[in-house]
Image (cartoon, rainbow, N blue to C red):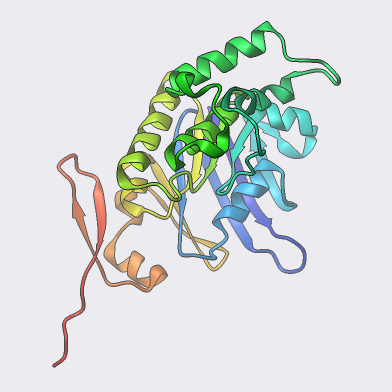
Length: 261
């Protein structure tokens, strides 16, 4: 079953599209990482899937055209975590995560026992229970990223969009967050689409990669198929070597150029 399907999708903010010609199938329960150099259009593509910017082409969620969905239906189908989330001043973690239940509430309705139970479960799964009463502004970067993920998980959507979820995190916290997403994906069958700058992490966690450059898809496939030294050099303008970890994942590492003198 396909969790997400795009056919010749283009998106932008007016005028010429920022990204165009995207055709990709993301099976339900799988992880697709969208990679590419800065300014390639990765974040714009995720915003188009989330319904935050206009798009052309065909975009289907679970076999249903997204164009035919209301805003509430789309919010029940897609959870979106932006690269830089707006964190309300003075709000505590539990109340922030509870915002994820909004698409499931009737107009003017208040959260009920079911919603609070969902939030409690999310806080427990993300190891945030002991921080439930803490203000968001007092959290560390890693804790705040988990809180943002918690709000999205509380939506209980079949598709999860994560725009650079490891931004600002050190390698340990980044790894912990991605391990958590992968565990939740396995437990819940959630379809994950993320943008990732770190190609090593992208190769280790995503089952397939979509490489975008200058607003166009230029390669897609398994990490081993996409992350070749020639492809990375061509689209990132970097001298690299591709080695393999003990688990067989490709790892892109910079290669110093020899000095002529």
